[in-house]
View 1 (cartoon, rainbow, N blue to C red):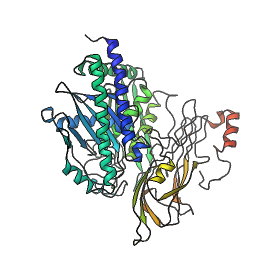
View 2 (cartoon, rainbow, N blue to C red):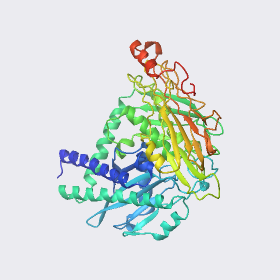
View 3 (cartoon, rainbow, N blue to C red):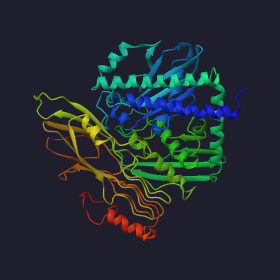
View 4 (tube, rainbow, N blue to C red):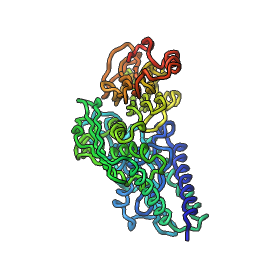
Amino acid sequence: MTGTIDLQIMWNRLIAVVEEQATTLIRTAFSTSVREAGDLSAGLFDARARMIAQAVTGTPGHVNAMAESVGHFARAIPPAETYPGDVFLTNDPWLGTGHLHDITVVTPVFRRDRLIGYFACTAHVVDVGGRGFGPDASEVYEEGLLIPITKFAERGRVSRDLVRLIRANVRTPDQTVGDIHSLAACNEAGDRRLQAMLDEFGLDDLQALSDHIVEASRNATRAAIAAVPDGTYRNHMRVDGFEAPVDMHVRLDVTGDRLDCDFAGTSGPSRFGVNCPEVYTRAYACYGLKVAIAPDVPNNAGSLEPFAITAPEGCILAARRPAPVSVRHVMGHLVPDVVLGALHGALPGTVPAEGAAALWNIQISARAADPDADLPSAEVLMFNSGGTGARPGLDGLSATAFPSGVSTMSVEATEHTGPIVVWRKDLREGSGGRGRQRGGLGQVIEIEPRAGYEMWFNAMFDRVAHPARGRDGGEPGAGGRVELADGTPLHPKGRQKVPEGARLRLSLPGGGGLGDPAERDPEVAARDVAAGYVRGSDRDGTGR
């Protein structure tokens, strides 16, 4: 009989297994969003499709949504139709991780010819056809190719018809299909390492280990929730949206070891692709609650289960098919700020001020300025981050992705993928809100198409008209700005053109401050001024 200490040792080994799984994906991926930014997730699931281990590398939106999606795979392709060598995939936004650009690949794990679990991974691919990665569509059908849950490979044989179908519908066929093969390879690497571990411990299945992981994590999370004062806590946050501002409302009900989170009162759906499927809303709401309440409990099915997250069907945070959802991250990344604002009422001194939150992703289509010129086109995806909110006892982080946790792609890697030049990428002076703790700074980025090219870019930016708010007397961060370098204003959302010879300037938002600015240490405040962290003059031309 396996003892508790043995189970704990094996649990730790599983973390190493899924970390190798994720590392394999990073090393083999074609897309810079995976290779450079780490926009991915990887995990191991038991035979009941419960997530029992996830790689530290990865985003909450991917991994927590994937925790639900593997159950959909198991129901769509039951064990009787599952064979060694099978590989499943989908990019269905409502059964996967929220939009078509995320491809989830699931590989069944067999031991002694018996199904004992699944490896799963998700990554963002640069192109899936349609309008491209942007918010302009009016239905999901316009946003690209939707692949239902299906077999990419059966008994080790890749479906050539599926590959041909994908290649015929995307702008970057080699890159997109290459990324799918990378996803399959990363699951295979995890399987090899898991089989070696099971050999070492003399196990033929994961059941006892899985039950231990889920039960221990569930109990620890419930104990952490029980330490939160019982009560009802609310918050409201207004953000830019697309055609109109969006109001997000949340209510937290804490009773004993149970926490219910409801987004009733949130704005209805948008006509454009900023809608968010509920699976993605749940992923980020649960993340925000868990990191504040039970940060030390490993993330798995057991630790996610005690958080009950709901949103009214059809609202912007629970979009119905066939709503456009391409840039669902814009609303989804703001969800943690909403729930943390409510949780502040229960746990004062625990949560940060609001931050830039949503990534300032930019999808660029570089095209020859002269249609008759023999110049290749290119699709370039670039991730950029504003400042985080000030934290209790610490300043906010500058140019850092929270809550997504992805890295910013290097300028060199970005320029290598297409004919653009990044002329400027530096911290935006004075963009963090003042407070006892200062908010993190945003960035100023200038991008120009190379000679002979013009570029179309898909803007998907928020926190422009409604910047991050401070907390407990802290000042708001600076709102973002989108413009040409000559000052011509551009819209923060939608497809727009930058002609040859012009430069796009993005001024990313900063995080809110925390506490009364008058309480800031005078020496630290003086260093802020000397370093340009707070604005003494409008040196970058972008203002507050």
